[in-house]
Length: 346
Image (cartoon, rainbow, N blue to C red; front, side, top):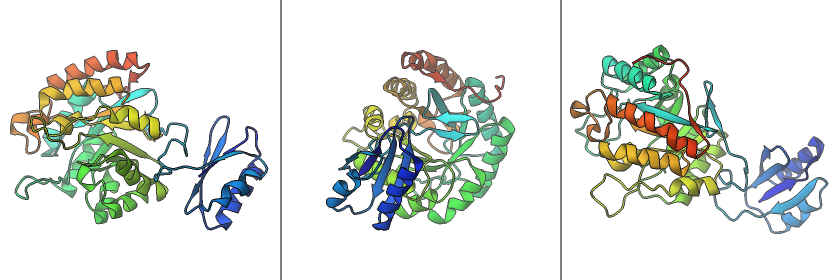
């Protein structure tokens, strides 16, 4: 249920309604817009509450919310959420590109890649230190030493960083070194992990599960939001279908659908969605055309010898070509490519 306040209502009226709701054992979420303030009511709502609230001073209307996800819904939060990160905005007018290796292998590999992607226009450095792999015999990351390298290279290149956290007991460790915590597709419904990242003040990128529908995805986001962390970024990374030619099937429709039903920013990961480097650029551009707020791209200095996901990683040249094409597509959406804080020459 949401309570829409009248334009120009007083702060005392808002506080009075919030107190009345909390006295009933319910939780309150207040969203103040330019013209209206919306008060979200969280918890088991009894039918008579609507009539009660509509009679209170300052109330314009009370609207039941049928969706099981409340805080993530557009009804609760009509305005777009914009995540602020070191001067960058994710969810605004700019397209943010996060790029780097799937797995951190060495300082040289990471630094060389960071310099190359930033020179091409990427604004956030990605790099995996803990890797969920299908086989236990595959390279599973450098762990904390990889996180230290990511923090050092991010500082040297003046790029915010993002890396995946896989376990609840590792949240504090990963948060110590990176700027954005990533929840991978396999952990989308690891609810204990979602609770833990929700308790941090770090932005969280939540990937869609391999076979998850939109409601399940947004309910996963709800876990993070319910803990008080409003800095949630959704990421479409392809879903599992009957098709075997690609690693997954990229669901471009997810981008405009999420923008319709939720206020959370959404980016696309065409690398994991396709599993093939030559499909990454076409789907990246399609995602921008569909309205994505950003991209997550895997880049490696020599994909042929990469320890993880080489077949889907772009070379430096291919990444530069993609970045040169994005502004044209973004312009058609009245948007532009975000600019790195300090450009590094190739």
